[in-house]
Image (cartoon, rainbow, N blue to C red; front, side, top):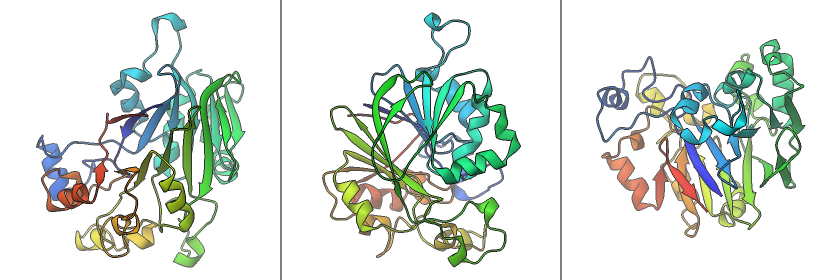
Length: 309
């Protein structure tokens, strides 16, 4: 199995277009220790020819140009692309907006849970994905599903969706309090495995580490996990928001109840932070926080990072 990180940042990318924080300033200036990043998405393949996208970020047009593995090939006719399927983990804008890029007469199979499917159905703009070309398949929670292309050909991979603590997308909040925002169906994690049993976990958004997540992480080769914020009050202290990380539905990287502490006993699985907010100092390779991440056995994803299992 090959895994390519198409994007590793949280919503807005890095540097974020309207942010003047320290990290964004350094990234704009071309500081080699602070790599620019697009919004989080992975491409996964069992054969290196047919690729499955895990989420379709708003930056997908740029990602398609930047990554040669997703370019059309000479043998495929006037219009072709190696994207055979797309699997969606949630209905946030940074998970689904890129689907609008895949409207140009290209066949692929779209896997999403009922909640995401209902969001796509309710918004007329997603009707530009021709149902004669884009085959939708319901992604059940629990139980592995064999991934296929639009024609029904197997891709040598399976996906299993599982519930992850989280909240409704921002555009569906409508003044609800935090308790009402928590939803057992709006956020999922994805377990992708090849025919040899090698597998990855993709959990770009998570509000808490459950026993189920810990168990799944322990039986996976690689885990890409929510690295949005370094600490819970990060956005508030930066003067950029009045929301804590918990209010945003994200577990902090640091702290006694943070991600690194929660997975401290997990030593055999390769652990990689993804979906990293522009304010998070782990985006600066030379920061003390990035050093602590490395010392804890974690890595920080970057665009173009490749993992082979």
